[in-house]
Length: 306
Image 1: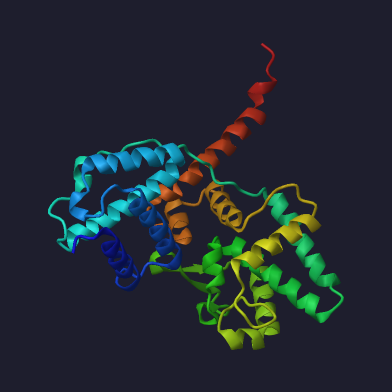
Image 2: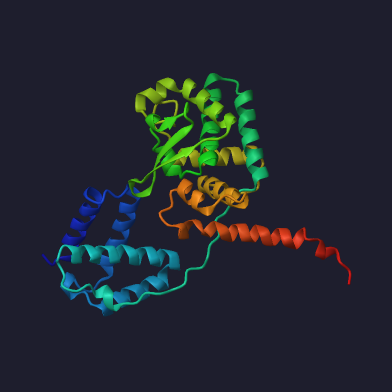
């Protein structure tokens, strides 16, 4: 069986059923490999040569940023490793290709801590001043969502997929299923956060019981990432914050704040669920940026007149 399309289909099924990759990763693989198929001049997997792959990679560099190119190459490489593993090809054409290019370091965007405080204060005020029970419940849930994001540094996809059985408020422990179905546990250390989560769980007990997810809407359906994004935009506007805030920025702020508080980067890696410390080390660039700002503006040498 040398047909490229048939092998691509089999590979994606293999990723779904045997490797158990999550939906977002499968979607990215499908997009990247479909593009690979449409741009190739041949349809026989044995006819794919290093020259053909080099031309494909060159076109990618013309159309995309380095980070996207790196991902697309990784998708195609994984496919060829599969072909080799299944003994469908004798030699992997990638072995004769050396792919090296420098990705620009893109620093994670964080939220100033005073801005988070303003944001949360606005949310609590909305909850306190809500005129109807419906508005009060919505505001309560919104506060619980943001407190959970900032307290744990979890991804928005992880928060939306939390089951009620994953959240043990008595032990203050959250079980998170991250990328690649990897589990990690994280503690919530703040009493106020625990209190608001307990209040939310009590008020939404019926809705939570209906769908088994921890974060739900008032129709008893799991909360979606789109609804959380809309909610963040709403409170950003209400608080008159001149910053575009995304759910992931709470994760970045969580990590950077801990690093600036001298928490060992290995603990931060574990809490974020990063498979490699190299991924977590991006936050050291943010911390160094902060250090540079402090030493430029606060060091007494700036006031010397010599």
